[in-house]
Length: 324
Ligand code: PEP
Ligand code: MG
Image (tube, rainbow, N blue to C red):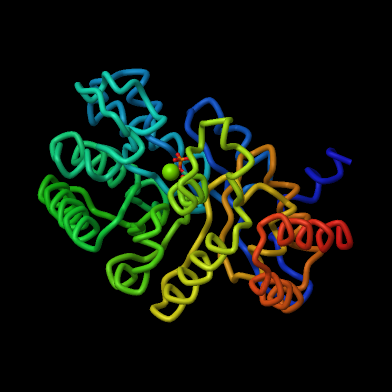
């Protein structure tokens, strides 16, 4: 069955009623790149920068550029979405940042670190821009919680681009700007963020954690970690509606994107893109092809009347089992 899934996976994922949904792969190591095409992924929906820093804490611009170019070449002509460094929380040694924090998940993390360390941030932005000479690139910021952060990050990006043009680079591919939506404040003000970006990528791993106040790595509260909680689904719905009103596309790059039991809900919520681990890409594409987006929208409407995450999960699972 696995072989059959993979054999058909290169084709686009289009629902029975004609809605095309892009399915990308998540990646963090250059070694993973051969799998991206093999699994049928349409580009990379999330390339995490953290591991490049883990390999070499200095991560000089040229080294980052080499790694990013390899990713773009492996995915071209499809889009690669690079995420700027997201240290903090569960990622990298806290010693890396030079101080201990009592609540690292609520602390100095993601874009907060980048805006406070512009030299490090701009090395990444320059490397990503240089990689865009080899194919289409998206650049997104993690852990956004306010408009000001996106405006500041965009200003750095624009300056880096100007610098590179002065150095003689001629940009031939579009570079899209994106914000990760993984904090409830960002999901709530998606309409205010949208004018500053080309796309949103919803990070459900963190969005679930912060919405439900459930530590994503604490097994003690693991049963409370519920991606189908109505509060999470309402936030996702708000993000999609606000984005589409402003002509901004929306993807999901959290684990939820690779869970085929959730696919009917995500299709019904109107997501434009799903980015999953390469091992799940063929399954997700297969699932989308068995679904009718209109029916999925009705499933979402009915599910949003339910109060319990378990009930919504069961409903979606039953729907999925009925279709694939
Ligand atoms: C997420 O939060 O869903 C996400 C994709 O980012 P990470 O898991 O790297 O925090
Ligand atoms: Mg995250």
